[in-house]
Each structure stands twice: as C-alpha cells, then as structure tokens.
Length: 70
View 1: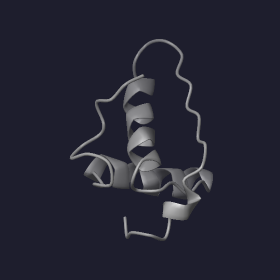
View 2: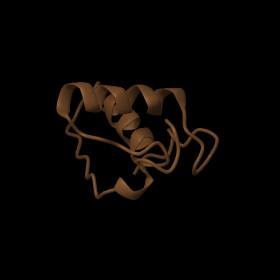
View 3: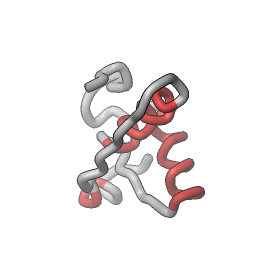
View 4: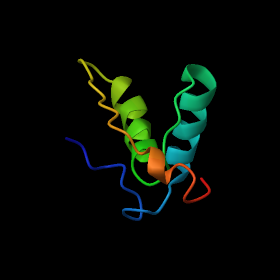
C-alpha cells in the first residue's frame, strides 16, 4: 500500500492523476475516474519506475467517470 498520491484528499483531482487518466486512455483504451483510480494509476506509474514488481488492481470507478470533469 502506498498513500503518497492522495493529493488534497478524496475527491480532489491532482495534476498527476489527470496526466495518468490521459495516458491510460490514449495508450490503453482504459478510462479512469479522477476521484480515486486516476491518482492510483499516477502512483503506479511512479512506483513502476523503481525496482521490483508492481501489481495494480483496477476494480471499477465507472460511475464517477462522468460525475466530475477531470
């Protein structure tokens, strides 16, 4: 578990999260929400640059996709 990418808190999008949302959509066709999964994916990208294996579990978030603008 890593909580270094929460930013201003739950429901507050971050610049890194927004960049991760665009990256996942453009390169993988995966849509991430700005509340949680976008920030989590930003963390994944940062941690994946380091040594060792990384596991990312995307469990949803679709209801939040259109609730807020990223």
